[in-house]
Amino acid sequence: MKQIKTLLAIVAFLGTIFTTQAQTRTVVKIYPKHGTMVTTVSNPRVIVHKRTNYYYADGVWYKARGKKYVVTAAPKSIKLRTLPRGSKVVYRNGRRLYQYRGIWYKRSGNHYVVVNV
Image 1 (tube, rainbow, N blue to C red):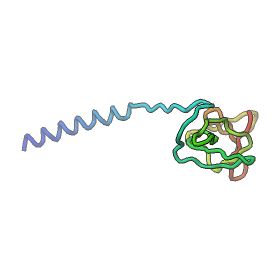
Image 2: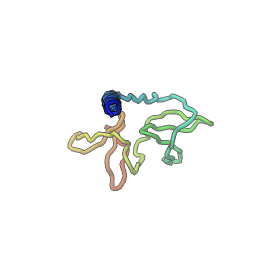
Image 3: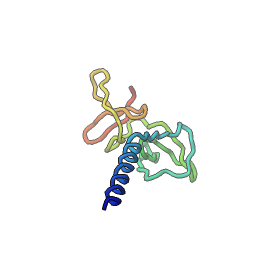
Image 4: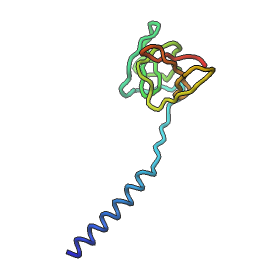
């Protein structure tokens, strides 16, 4: 019985050490620069703007070039239904805007529109 209690105490102690180490880890996500070509895009949304297909995934905009995708700037005045996760509310010149990775959005009805700031 004493061995079981000792074993449980050791397991509990190791469990607390591993959970505290897991909480201190930092995940750094690196986004591709404009002009970078990639072969696949995970779960992209296709948005047609001025007769051009744009692919949008995880806050990054792409255009198709053959069988690959090129990272591109967000097209101005394009509409999105939802903002990327992690976007921040910023007030500029009395206007409420949203920013994510250097791209500025404003709310327009049920959509968010890319704007110049």
